[in-house]
Length: 273
Length: 284
Image 1 (spheres, rainbow over the protein chains, first blue to last red):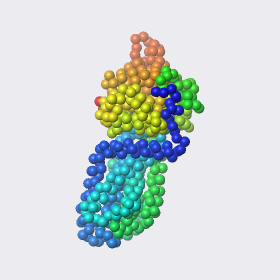
Image 2 (cartoon, each protein chain N blue to C red):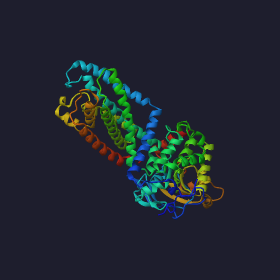
Image 3 (tube, helix red, strand yellow):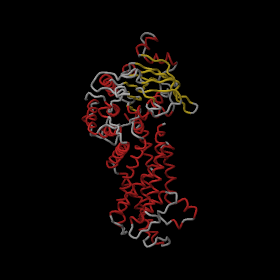
Image 4 (cartoon, each protein chain N blue to C red):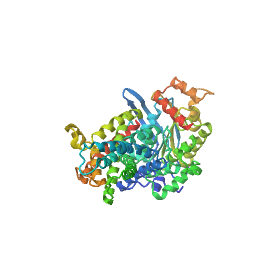
């Protein structure tokens, strides 16, 4: 080792807050992605549910013809909803991994480092976003096989990727908040099951909002999944229609993400108490 | 405060960090959980460059004390300074100057040793040009170079502990906190960890605080110990002085019984015991 004191020699806390902040987030997301690529079992098992929804539920409800879907088939209408659903289902249980990390002492060590707590949470959210991208590939392949007309313009695909990453970040950070509150895997499993279905059914994922009774429509307007589905509907499908503009959906999702990020940043340290 | 004042050692020199008289200093430090007082008005003054042992049974308050000193838990009352910085008002400065090995196995099993260390290097803001060198030096110091590209989940318990020490020393902290560092290790692995800890003190002048309920470990490793019982420090001093104070031909178990009125295996609630056993099982 060299002769200079350690802090001068190797520790360069950057004077640029943002550089330091994003370097820390990137470090966290990088290791999460590495672990996921080493053991991708979870990604494949997560693919089973969307297959069932599209192939079974989608095909059966296509015959009903009772759901107004505009100029597109029900299967095409359903496809963005199922992508959003698989993003939700894979992200909402992210908190269990965090509780597991707490039990292993990994969180303790992260908390003792001088890294910003918000950057640690953001790193987790970014890695969850990567998981969401894998869901995009799965749903696109499935949609192709089922003969659904997808949009292939680069900006539309870019919009899908951004929306999915953001949606995944929202639900994984929400999951982290829940994990910090309930603190045990057993409690989390119960809460996770309670949360997922209402979030899914009280959204526009499998039917338009207009079909809902007013009270449920009111609830759906506060559901971030609604805005993810809305953004995906026109970006993914040929002839698909979104209620809001892409910009509006993104602004809503970014705002929700910031709220969850701040809440998670505040609660994350309490996970180890 | 200058860098030297901050307590960063000069690697390679056998010299304790200077600039403050206490590496760890607490004044009436307490922590309550509801009505239960886990740590009750403890006063510590730990000289830089020493190995200090906090000894006591499960549930004595050792881990809670370490959590307060490492800024993981806010004290209910009292104060604590690490390398001259207050744990409450300067928590970030404290975190830059400490290394921590929790009781649980905290190295990430899904990553290699290299990746675990690189993550620490990035989170501690090390310069890109220095990361690789520092990681290699830490791996060499802990004799892990040969297996640095293997996944940690394939490591033995002793190797994982050495990797955690490598992670904790990577940024050359002024103070190293180790919570039950040898729990669950076999006798050979335990001795290797002791030998590396002694080398850290002697070669880099680090101050090391360990918690343990293993009296042999305390006797062999520590320059000074404090016996902790039901949240209070009952007595402190060098192992030799404490034994002399009780009588001739006594060990630290006798010292503990003499000053606390109980045996070291007593104490601890279901949660403490479960945590200890979980760590031991993972190491086995």
